Length: 271
Image (cartoon, rainbow, N blue to C red; front, side, top):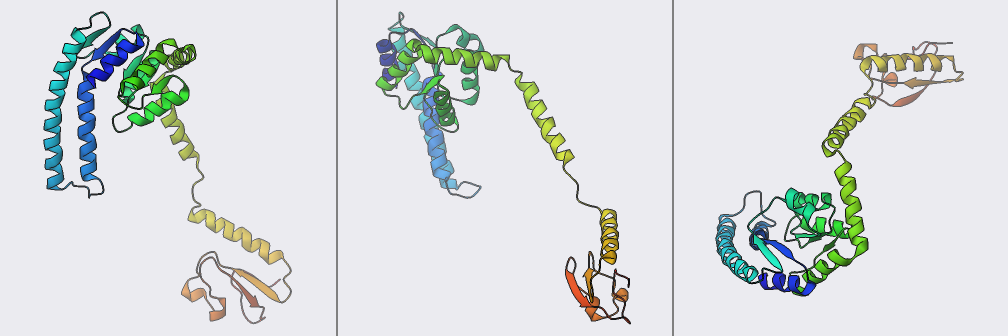
């Protein structure tokens, strides 16, 4: 990977500040990918064998990262006119002072380069990094670097420093993001959602159902049904109020009965 990055920087004719996090990030990505593959499809608790395998691979990856970092420092040190090595550096301080940023695509790092108003180049390794890489490319403010091949990296660096359309789009998005109050927007969103939920119509109470029942009964009593009475049962009558099996029904059902002068019909009176 070091040879690809160093070669891409030289080929694209830019000066690059390169962080050692690249080698550590690649190793971490490989380790997490192996761990996820080992536990994929398993239950909530990974098997003992899978856990041990992931731990061994992590230890091996850490050793490889140390070797790769030492090699990167050596290669970059040989080219002081085109690149400079740093172990780490604050994004908020560095990004506003450079022309473009190439990184792994973590949510925080992506936000920092977008806010700085510079083209964002992302070579994802795992997790949500691919999403952010695709997102910046769709917005026209950066490039989803397909691989760690020297040609892919060089092409992305060249475009980020020469493509006026991408540069302008990144600058415009940076101004937009910088002008927003993210904390306030998040709080407002939470409160607005809560307010909408509070305004939702509550379910009718038993008292309200009683009022509806009385109003419906009053309306039905005034309608001419001829020889047929419509019985509306809004809730089941107590056993003692049911004069015969013909007047009983299940909750919410509507029953049709023939009128009998000697028989009282529930909820209705003779006109």
